[in-house]
Length: 167
Image 1 (cartoon, one colour):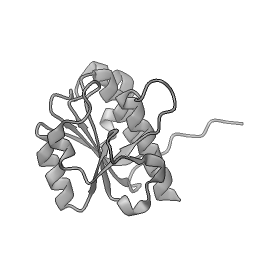
Image 2 (image 1 turned 90 degrees about the vertical axis):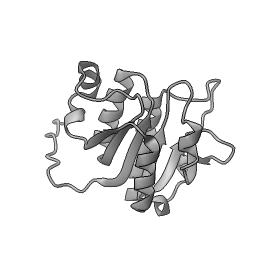
Image 3 (image 1 turned 30 degrees about the horizontal axis):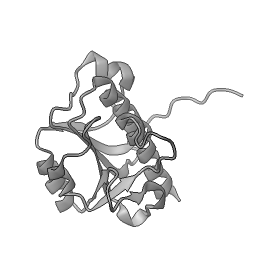
């Protein structure tokens, strides 16, 4: 058994998936989100509100340079981003537990192109951003804690999206 060579992404088509991060505090969470977005070959990453953005050594440390391979943009006003994406034909999905959340394991390819909104580590997605969402997706939780770390949850959802797109 031998290790495989790292792929040359080059012009490889990206998945019709955008991640919108709003008011995430931790530089390390942002770096981890960059790394998951790179691994899932997402189309673009938006960093909104007070979410930190590159260049920051703490982001680069956990991103392992994925902050150089993932197309990203910092836009302070999340509603500006969501309005733009909706006009471009994206379904806007909150990664959030709500009264109407759908399990991410029940999503179908009809939701794509998809923009996934993830929010603050403590307070989640702000109400003004939730109002722009077409659907809420959640990761089913079976233990005492009813949520995952925002970076972990983003990674889980990104790869579930890839699985849905490839099936």
